[in-house]
Image (cartoon, rainbow, N blue to C red; front, side, top):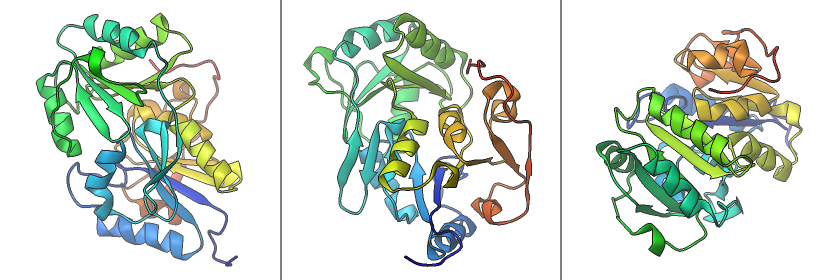
Length: 288
């Protein structure tokens, strides 16, 4: 055991728009140095992202971690060094009919089916094509009846600009939660509605990883900016968000124990530039 000042801590950062503020751009050198400093001082650093294993390989050269990654919004814990999954959850057998019904309830919605590193498309739209292009994944169309189980996750892509807040994506998530209670976790991100098995979100993924690594819950630090980050921010012993995060993350209604960072830098975690914002007061509050 070393004696670095971050020994026994796990730092988990969302990737897109947080650790890498500009989509498709290199990670800022200041963020890379900050993460490296954390690791040099004995801490464990990793990324939690909605990206799947295949998409992870398209960005792996942009950053260095020393702990397994939380992928597919918590459905997968993946060791990038060995190329092996430490944990993977799967959608229930009924997911094909359930999620096709959800797609068809919102005309113009595209559908991605993720099976580990394999992605198949069941109905495309411009947003879906842009999303897969950004993830480095080709569009491969398939009849949903011919896609073998198990499925890791499904992404329903609403019509509209991919990265802008999208009411249809929120409505899809609400439809899935209300129509199929207890079966799925559904979180919006721009035009995307990301759907994984119940009990598998970023928060549960981070908890599982911390358990695997024998990290005490109070020593888990999370940084995120979007709807799919709320569960891990709730889980964290210390939670941080960049200034560009969704306003709802800083609202008491999200019941997130958040800290507000004045600059979009992971380095803020190491400095005194963070100040507290409103803490959770309503345990019954729900994401819209």
